[in-house]
Length: 394
Image (cartoon, rainbow, N blue to C red; front, side, top):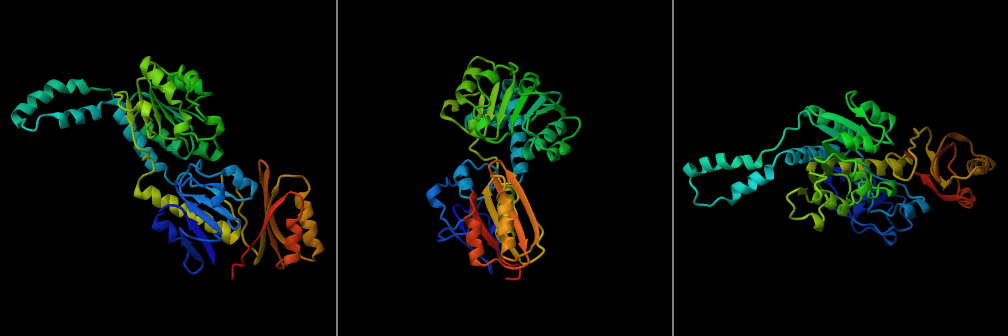
């Protein structure tokens, strides 16, 4: 029986992926095998020694102590792409709201006197509607910074709206590149992207290298009439620099899903309360993906969509399997295999991959290892943890 501790309300569709016959799930769970959460700010002291994996039902993992988990050999999973369509649709709303003063028009209607009759309203609207005029998106240039699961959808959205689309992503994967339409112009750098775009939409992860990626220096490359949209993460944008750019008319409008006190009350800012992934469908998709990844890891040792471990999936061939996590040092795998061989156990299949300072190994054996061998493996220099994977027949 695997025990899963939850820290937030997780969609029932996701929890149903964990069979009750083999999984116990709850918010109060001692000696949990894994943690499943959404936005809870997880602290190291909330991760007991029994925890083998953590999954976030969402893309961002800045609420999880990644470095601490890596040191302990705990893979952290996220769900990239599960909420991509929800965010894309909100970006569509942001583009439309930024291009025409729709909000101002709605506020104007709601501010009219309650006793204004239909006869008087018509001429008033005709006289005032020019205040809320804007421009069409068709023919304008959309610059997309980050062309992953969400960015690629936003790029397609721009094309569907009749916009010229340019994109830049220094870390684009081959898979993501294949998904992009050929009509998306690839820029060589951010400066080239910013200098040609009327609208810039940000879709990069919140990591150390993207902290305040949009700042005074990069904003200087923006066109004077440009509009910036941030539906990625708050820390990617230096709010003070954006305020300066707006005040100096170097930026026409800022649309963001991450409100800040400095931005409230400004007519040139459209602020949303972090609702990019707030759809029933996105929450279900994220929960399902997170639960499936936890299950694949606990039952088979397989890793998909981990932010700190390599992707590794090995088809089960025999019942006995061990998973070994170690620091990425030369000779460690050879030492592991030598000890297994010395115990008169044959390796049926194995897969070894590394990521940065972590190496992860799945090893199928013809005979289940005994406690003595497991202890020997754990005592190898550099080995962080050794986990026996339950037999599929158990």
